[in-house]
Image 1 (cartoon, one colour):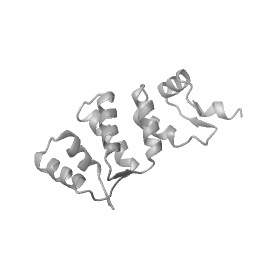
Image 2 (image 1 turned 45 degrees about the vertical axis):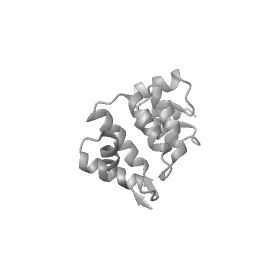
Image 3 (image 1 turned 90 degrees about the vertical axis):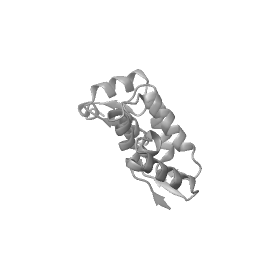
Length: 137
């Protein structure tokens, strides 16, 4: 199995460097078993949003396409899929990915007010709250 770096996936989905995009596509099309670490997806979202100015709907579609490629396997795939659902409704991708990994916890301590408000509005479980609120448990 070969692991893929962010830059390989970025070339594949943006086609901004024709030579590297062709190499990336050839590797994907080879049928070889390929692995995508969660950290690569986290960085890829950041690159697509920040450097390429893609909106979240386009990034969700891009990730869904990558998830559908038969010979790509993803670390924590179920958590990534859950994070994409939350990202699609307005959560920050990193926050959504962090939250999808803590489902067995009683809560998620964060100083991020926007994350806390959106989590409360959507009734996300486990609850997201300031650290001081958990000291009352």
